[in-house]
Image (cartoon, rainbow, N blue to C red; front, side, top):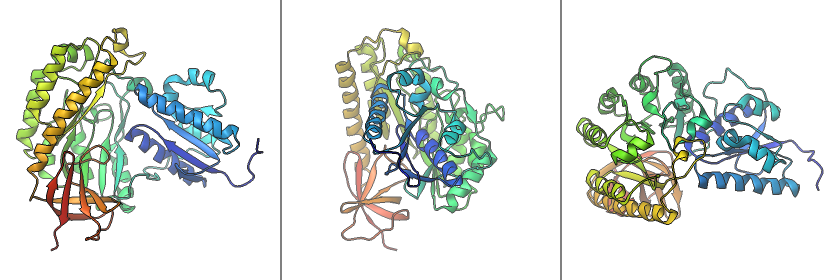
Length: 435
């Protein structure tokens, strides 16, 4: 086994899971850099920090496999130390310590100061918005709150992230200004529940006021809303979305299901009638809004009738963007007390059926865009295409606009206006409009 490296330590941060984890890794890296540490993201380094996900089975497996991969590298002498943080570590620390004891130390989601100390760095309270962003330079996530107070039966996030805690508006504005100064043009607002923002510190749902402040930040051109909850949605947000061109006409609102019996068991606090009414109010208030949702199939007790009701509702509502997941039976959640009685192959068949319907809806909606002009942001170049997005699309999860790079030169990170020439299920093909 190789003796410990004498060269200067380089800390490699590896991020697994959702955008909240991306944000947390960026904050960690910003703190390390402020302490003079050499830090990289998913490159070679002799000290490794793995920011894990513990949400559902697939994510947990990926996290465990990544830890094991780096433990092997440590054994082979390719890395000196391995630290594990994030949701998996928060949720299963005792089990992990017992089963993978060679990890140098485990830290939970709220133990950043301890992790920094283990890495030889100081936690600097005065750092507001000092992050090393890992996303393309033109967009960044802005986490406006941590944790969740919702009682959803299937979700383990409150176990891993704690109670809802909003970040003050003034801090978020400072953070947005610093991101804009570094070339960020699009802010993607994230939280476990955007609709709850402000209730803890301002004693009211205060997302609209936050948006009123963020639109004043110079250099920011798009502000996108992710992860709203259908119960208690602050409708004044729609007024500012209509009024302010910087607020994208886009809302990510995970609805999970539509059968009343399943919604009740899921403890979602709503009904099919209320949900459908809310969506119609969205459409009336902001006619060209793109609504993105996610659904869960195979929840305990989901009958064929429940599924068919969901399937027909998806056809009826014609969501612009939709993702579908199979239910994951998570210990210490309320639903874990129920019998996980839908076979895995049935869950998968149901998810596939929903996505087939959505694929057709998306294709039909995209056909309507042929000949239309859109403002797009260019995220990257891939092969013979520049890849862009409209205001109706979030990175990684939504549609993309492909522009021929052999006939056109565009700058990544810049906005351009294009005309759609062709459309597939989930992609648009376009050419730039020369002014």
